[in-house]
Length: 259
Ligand code: IPD
Ligand code: CA
Ligand code: CA
Image (cartoon, rainbow, N blue to C red):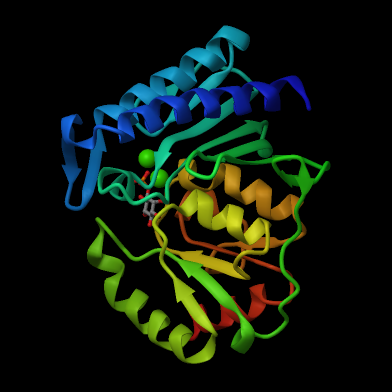
Protein backbone atom coordinates (compact mmCIF):
# COMPACT_ATOMS: atom_id res chain seq x y z
CA UNK A 1 0.00 0.00 0.00
CA UNK A 2 1.38 3.44 -0.87
CA UNK A 3 2.37 5.84 1.90
CA UNK A 4 -0.51 8.21 1.21
CA UNK A 5 -3.13 5.46 1.21
CA UNK A 6 -1.66 4.06 4.39
CA UNK A 7 -2.09 7.43 6.11
CA UNK A 8 -5.63 7.74 4.75
CA UNK A 9 -6.49 4.36 6.27
CA UNK A 10 -4.83 5.25 9.59
CA UNK A 11 -6.74 8.54 9.70
CA UNK A 12 -10.02 6.75 8.98
CA UNK A 13 -9.34 4.19 11.73
CA UNK A 14 -8.48 6.92 14.23
CA UNK A 15 -11.72 8.77 13.48
CA UNK A 16 -13.66 5.50 13.55
CA UNK A 17 -12.34 4.67 17.02
CA UNK A 18 -13.40 8.06 18.34
CA UNK A 19 -16.84 7.82 16.71
CA UNK A 20 -17.52 4.32 18.03
CA UNK A 21 -16.53 5.32 21.54
CA UNK A 22 -18.92 8.29 21.33
CA UNK A 23 -21.69 6.02 19.99
CA UNK A 24 -21.81 4.30 23.40
CA UNK A 25 -23.13 7.45 25.07
CA UNK A 26 -25.18 9.20 22.39
CA UNK A 27 -27.29 11.04 24.97
CA UNK A 28 -24.26 13.13 26.01
CA UNK A 29 -23.36 14.38 22.54
CA UNK A 30 -23.81 18.09 21.84
CA UNK A 31 -25.59 18.68 18.52
CA UNK A 32 -25.91 21.92 16.54
CA UNK A 33 -28.18 22.58 13.60
CA UNK A 34 -26.35 24.02 10.54
CA UNK A 35 -29.65 24.48 8.72
CA UNK A 36 -32.92 22.65 7.98
CA UNK A 37 -32.24 18.89 8.47
CA UNK A 38 -28.50 19.61 8.55
CA UNK A 39 -26.94 18.60 11.85
CA UNK A 40 -23.38 18.63 13.11
CA UNK A 41 -22.24 17.18 16.41
CA UNK A 42 -19.12 17.64 18.46
CA UNK A 43 -18.22 14.11 17.31
CA UNK A 44 -18.12 15.22 13.63
CA UNK A 45 -15.80 18.06 14.63
CA UNK A 46 -13.52 15.96 16.83
CA UNK A 47 -13.31 13.20 14.23
CA UNK A 48 -12.30 15.77 11.60
CA UNK A 49 -9.58 17.17 13.88
CA UNK A 50 -8.20 13.66 14.44
CA UNK A 51 -8.06 13.06 10.69
CA UNK A 52 -6.40 16.42 10.05
CA UNK A 53 -3.77 15.76 12.74
CA UNK A 54 -2.97 12.33 11.27
CA UNK A 55 -2.58 13.82 7.79
CA UNK A 56 -0.52 16.80 8.93
CA UNK A 57 1.89 14.63 10.90
CA UNK A 58 2.81 12.81 7.69
CA UNK A 59 2.15 15.49 5.06
CA UNK A 60 2.30 18.94 6.69
CA UNK A 61 2.31 20.76 3.35
CA UNK A 62 -0.71 19.15 1.71
CA UNK A 63 -4.04 20.96 1.30
CA UNK A 64 -7.03 19.64 3.25
CA UNK A 65 -10.70 20.24 2.46
CA UNK A 66 -12.80 19.10 5.40
CA UNK A 67 -16.57 19.31 5.70
CA UNK A 68 -16.42 20.94 9.14
CA UNK A 69 -13.33 23.16 8.88
CA UNK A 70 -13.24 24.16 5.21
CA UNK A 71 -10.06 24.46 3.15
CA UNK A 72 -6.54 24.48 4.54
CA UNK A 73 -4.72 25.84 1.49
CA UNK A 74 -0.96 25.22 1.41
CA UNK A 75 -0.71 25.67 -2.34
CA UNK A 76 0.04 21.96 -2.69
CA UNK A 77 -0.64 19.65 -5.67
CA UNK A 78 -2.32 17.31 -3.16
CA UNK A 79 -5.72 17.98 -1.60
CA UNK A 80 -7.25 15.64 0.96
CA UNK A 81 -11.07 15.72 0.78
CA UNK A 82 -12.62 14.44 3.98
CA UNK A 83 -16.00 13.71 5.47
CA UNK A 84 -15.25 12.74 9.06
CA UNK A 85 -18.72 11.27 9.60
CA UNK A 86 -20.91 10.59 6.58
CA UNK A 87 -24.35 9.73 7.89
CA UNK A 88 -24.55 11.99 10.95
CA UNK A 89 -28.34 11.65 11.20
CA UNK A 90 -28.03 7.86 11.38
CA UNK A 91 -25.18 8.10 13.90
CA UNK A 92 -27.15 10.41 16.19
CA UNK A 93 -30.05 7.93 16.21
CA UNK A 94 -27.88 4.87 16.86
CA UNK A 95 -28.57 3.61 13.32
CA UNK A 96 -25.39 1.78 12.29
CA UNK A 97 -25.06 3.02 8.70
CA UNK A 98 -22.38 5.72 8.63
CA UNK A 99 -18.79 5.99 7.50
CA UNK A 100 -15.60 8.01 7.33
CA UNK A 101 -14.65 9.12 3.82
CA UNK A 102 -11.17 10.27 2.77
CA UNK A 103 -10.20 10.98 -0.84
CA UNK A 104 -6.93 12.45 -2.07
CA UNK A 105 -6.74 14.56 -5.22
CA UNK A 106 -3.41 14.99 -7.02
CA UNK A 107 -3.63 17.75 -9.62
CA UNK A 108 -7.09 17.29 -11.12
CA UNK A 109 -7.38 13.54 -10.45
CA UNK A 110 -8.62 11.64 -7.41
CA UNK A 111 -5.77 9.22 -6.79
CA UNK A 112 -6.44 7.57 -3.42
CA UNK A 113 -9.58 6.63 -1.52
CA UNK A 114 -10.48 5.17 1.85
CA UNK A 115 -14.03 4.68 3.14
CA UNK A 116 -14.35 3.06 6.58
CA UNK A 117 -17.49 1.41 7.95
CA UNK A 118 -16.67 1.26 11.67
CA UNK A 119 -19.68 -0.87 12.60
CA UNK A 120 -18.61 -3.74 10.35
CA UNK A 121 -14.90 -2.94 10.58
CA UNK A 122 -14.81 -2.80 6.78
CA UNK A 123 -12.23 -0.63 5.05
CA UNK A 124 -12.77 0.08 1.34
CA UNK A 125 -9.66 1.39 -0.43
CA UNK A 126 -8.58 2.31 -3.95
CA UNK A 127 -5.53 3.67 -5.70
CA UNK A 128 -5.70 5.12 -9.21
CA UNK A 129 -4.80 2.42 -11.73
CA UNK A 130 -4.39 -0.27 -9.07
CA UNK A 131 -7.94 -1.46 -8.39
CA UNK A 132 -10.23 -1.32 -5.37
CA UNK A 133 -10.35 -3.49 -2.27
CA UNK A 134 -12.61 -4.34 0.63
CA UNK A 135 -10.23 -5.20 3.47
CA UNK A 136 -7.66 -7.46 1.72
CA UNK A 137 -9.81 -8.64 -1.18
CA UNK A 138 -10.24 -7.11 -4.62
CA UNK A 139 -13.76 -5.88 -5.36
CA UNK A 140 -15.70 -5.49 -8.62
CA UNK A 141 -19.00 -3.85 -9.53
CA UNK A 142 -21.96 -6.15 -10.20
CA UNK A 143 -22.78 -7.70 -13.58
CA UNK A 144 -26.52 -6.95 -13.55
CA UNK A 145 -27.36 -5.90 -17.11
CA UNK A 146 -30.96 -4.70 -16.97
CA UNK A 147 -32.52 -1.90 -14.97
CA UNK A 148 -35.50 -4.18 -14.25
CA UNK A 149 -33.23 -6.57 -12.33
CA UNK A 150 -31.23 -3.90 -10.54
CA UNK A 151 -31.11 -2.86 -6.90
CA UNK A 152 -30.16 0.83 -6.68
CA UNK A 153 -29.07 3.01 -3.79
CA UNK A 154 -30.23 6.62 -3.62
CA UNK A 155 -30.36 9.53 -1.22
CA UNK A 156 -33.45 11.66 -0.56
CA UNK A 157 -33.14 15.45 -0.69
CA UNK A 158 -32.53 16.50 2.90
CA UNK A 159 -31.79 20.16 3.49
CA UNK A 160 -32.39 21.75 0.03
CA UNK A 161 -35.99 20.98 -0.90
CA UNK A 162 -35.84 22.78 -4.27
CA UNK A 163 -34.92 19.36 -5.74
CA UNK A 164 -37.86 17.55 -4.18
CA UNK A 165 -40.39 17.61 -7.05
CA UNK A 166 -37.91 16.44 -9.67
CA UNK A 167 -36.50 13.88 -7.25
CA UNK A 168 -39.94 12.41 -6.62
CA UNK A 169 -40.70 12.18 -10.35
CA UNK A 170 -37.49 10.24 -10.93
CA UNK A 171 -38.03 8.12 -7.81
CA UNK A 172 -41.56 7.18 -8.98
CA UNK A 173 -40.14 6.01 -12.29
CA UNK A 174 -37.26 4.15 -10.59
CA UNK A 175 -39.72 2.31 -8.33
CA UNK A 176 -41.57 1.09 -11.42
CA UNK A 177 -38.54 0.17 -13.50
CA UNK A 178 -36.07 -1.41 -11.03
CA UNK A 179 -36.06 -4.30 -8.55
CA UNK A 180 -35.72 -1.84 -5.66
CA UNK A 181 -34.37 1.38 -4.23
CA UNK A 182 -32.49 1.70 -0.94
CA UNK A 183 -31.95 4.89 1.07
CA UNK A 184 -29.36 3.91 3.65
CA UNK A 185 -28.10 7.39 4.66
CA UNK A 186 -24.37 7.49 3.88
CA UNK A 187 -23.47 8.46 0.31
CA UNK A 188 -19.85 7.36 0.76
CA UNK A 189 -21.00 3.88 1.78
CA UNK A 190 -23.58 3.83 -1.03
CA UNK A 191 -20.68 4.30 -3.45
CA UNK A 192 -18.61 1.65 -1.65
CA UNK A 193 -21.58 -0.69 -2.06
CA UNK A 194 -21.65 -0.01 -5.81
CA UNK A 195 -17.91 -0.74 -5.95
CA UNK A 196 -18.35 -4.04 -4.12
CA UNK A 197 -21.46 -5.12 -6.03
CA UNK A 198 -23.86 -4.97 -3.04
CA UNK A 199 -26.01 -2.62 -5.10
CA UNK A 200 -25.92 -2.24 -8.86
CA UNK A 201 -25.96 1.55 -8.96
CA UNK A 202 -26.45 4.79 -7.03
CA UNK A 203 -27.95 8.17 -7.86
CA UNK A 204 -28.36 11.32 -5.78
CA UNK A 205 -28.76 15.09 -6.21
CA UNK A 206 -26.76 17.89 -4.70
CA UNK A 207 -24.01 16.09 -2.80
CA UNK A 208 -20.80 17.74 -1.61
CA UNK A 209 -17.25 16.90 -2.76
CA UNK A 210 -16.48 15.19 0.58
CA UNK A 211 -19.49 12.86 0.15
CA UNK A 212 -18.27 11.53 -3.18
CA UNK A 213 -14.51 12.08 -3.73
CA UNK A 214 -13.39 8.76 -2.22
CA UNK A 215 -16.42 6.75 -3.36
CA UNK A 216 -15.97 7.97 -6.94
CA UNK A 217 -12.50 6.36 -7.12
CA UNK A 218 -13.72 3.15 -5.44
CA UNK A 219 -16.36 2.73 -8.15
CA UNK A 220 -13.99 3.58 -11.02
CA UNK A 221 -11.29 1.24 -9.78
CA UNK A 222 -13.85 -1.53 -9.29
CA UNK A 223 -14.74 -1.31 -12.99
CA UNK A 224 -17.76 0.96 -12.71
CA UNK A 225 -18.68 4.24 -14.38
CA UNK A 226 -19.55 7.55 -12.76
CA UNK A 227 -21.12 10.66 -14.33
CA UNK A 228 -23.33 13.66 -13.57
CA UNK A 229 -26.90 14.12 -14.85
CA UNK A 230 -25.60 15.46 -18.19
CA UNK A 231 -23.46 12.38 -18.68
CA UNK A 232 -20.38 14.55 -17.97
CA UNK A 233 -17.65 14.31 -15.35
CA UNK A 234 -18.66 17.37 -13.30
CA UNK A 235 -20.00 15.41 -10.29
CA UNK A 236 -17.75 17.20 -7.80
CA UNK A 237 -18.96 20.59 -9.06
CA UNK A 238 -22.71 19.93 -9.40
CA UNK A 239 -23.02 17.29 -6.67
CA UNK A 240 -25.36 15.30 -8.95
CA UNK A 241 -24.06 11.78 -9.37
CA UNK A 242 -24.80 8.48 -11.05
CA UNK A 243 -22.48 5.54 -10.33
CA UNK A 244 -23.11 2.04 -11.61
CA UNK A 245 -21.74 -0.93 -13.44
CA UNK A 246 -21.05 -0.06 -17.11
CA UNK A 247 -24.17 -1.86 -18.38
CA UNK A 248 -26.54 0.16 -16.22
CA UNK A 249 -25.13 3.67 -16.13
CA UNK A 250 -26.77 4.80 -19.41
CA UNK A 251 -30.11 3.27 -18.44
CA UNK A 252 -30.05 5.19 -15.14
CA UNK A 253 -28.96 8.40 -16.91
CA UNK A 254 -31.87 8.11 -19.40
CA UNK A 255 -34.38 7.57 -16.61
CA UNK A 256 -33.12 10.68 -14.82
CA UNK A 257 -33.01 12.82 -17.97
CA UNK A 258 -36.53 11.79 -19.02
CA UNK A 259 -38.12 12.79 -15.72
C1 IPD B 1 -25.19 13.04 4.15
C2 IPD B 1 -25.21 11.59 3.72
C3 IPD B 1 -26.54 11.23 3.10
C4 IPD B 1 -26.88 12.15 1.95
C5 IPD B 1 -26.83 13.59 2.40
C6 IPD B 1 -25.47 13.93 2.97
P1 IPD B 1 -23.67 13.90 6.21
O1 IPD B 1 -23.92 13.41 4.68
O2 IPD B 1 -24.21 11.31 2.79
O3 IPD B 1 -26.56 9.90 2.62
O4 IPD B 1 -28.15 11.82 1.46
O5 IPD B 1 -27.10 14.42 1.29
O6 IPD B 1 -25.44 15.28 3.38
O7 IPD B 1 -24.32 15.25 6.35
O8 IPD B 1 -24.24 12.89 7.11
O9 IPD B 1 -22.19 13.99 6.27
CA1 CA C 1 -21.61 13.64 4.03
CA1 CA D 1 -20.43 14.61 7.44
